[in-house]
Each structure stands twice: as structure tokens, then as C-alpha cells.
Length: 229
Image (cartoon, rainbow, N blue to C red; front, top):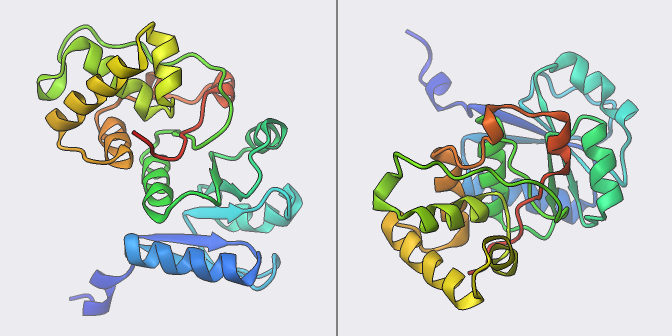
């Protein structure tokens, strides 16, 4: 029988590349509180070997791809996740071109970061912040879950891929009050009280799969913004 400690071992390991001490300590602390299944390894320098990891989190303004090379060799399946205060479109575009699976703002809260990590790990390339241009998933015409109306489902799809209320209104040709009304009724039907809960529900129900694969054009899809209703 395996030791009891094996059953309690974290299921996911995250290598956090060197950053400001407060950023590293704060990130490790918030993730340990919100997602105990994620073990954060804070690297003292980029040459340190953390062993096999599931995520490589780096700041594209501090680190280049060469500094990640030895980590990707030892963990070829690890997801590279950019983590930066700056969300300039050119910085985001460069990160995706260089193989980042996601780009997270350091202004995001703990639950938002964890939502992103879980979604990325599940294969959904949900993206936080930036890039207002992009096609959004088409709404399905049948099999709507939780008794959602077609319009509620369309609104939740756009919430899942990161559109703000104003963007949803423009895309669906609705008033902002109508958007808020659909969000309220949709949230009630899926049991969500916050935008991050709605995003996670949408990811779990396939509203952000983009046909189940990541294409070259998908690097231009919108990122998830901070949760607001």
C-alpha cells in the first residue's frame, strides 16, 4: 500500500520564475489558499531545476524563451503561462507566438488566476485580458443546459470568453440594461453569483472550447477580463 502522504501530494506542480519577492510570495500564498492541489515552486534563478512541472509561469518582460528552454526540456508537456503587469497587445501577441498557452495579468485575483489555470489544464485556452478583436463561439441551437434561453446562453458564451458587458451589448445589438438582465437571469439558472463562477461554469460546459482545438488564429481571440457584472 502506498504511503499515506502520497494520497495528499499536490496533483499539479507550478514553476514560478524569479520575480519581485512580494510578487512571488503573494502568488504562492494566494494559490495555496485557493487551490491546494497546486504546488508552487518559486525558483531562485532561471537555471534551477524544479523537476517535472505542469505549469511554467514567467514574466515576458523579465524572461525570454531561452531562459525557459531547460524547463521545457525537462517538462515538455508543461503549459507556459505569461504573467505580467503589462497587457500591451504587442506583448501578448509575442507571448502567444512564442508558445504561451495563456497570458494572465498580475492584477487578477486569486480565484481568477486559479480559474485560468484549471481551464488551461483542462485544455480550454481561456485567456485573460487584452485583445478586443476576435470571433466568438457560435451559440448552439439545441441542448441548452439549465433551462437557459438562447439569448441567455449567447450572453454566457460571451462572458466565458471574456467580453465586458459593453462588448456583449455591441456584439448582440442589445442595450446594456438588457445585457445585465440576461446576466442576472442566466446566473440564477446556473447558480452563479460572481463572474468568475460563470466563467468556470462556461468552461466546464464547453462554451470556450473554440471547436475543441487551438488554431493559429486563436492567438487573436479576446482574453478574459477581470470579473464585473
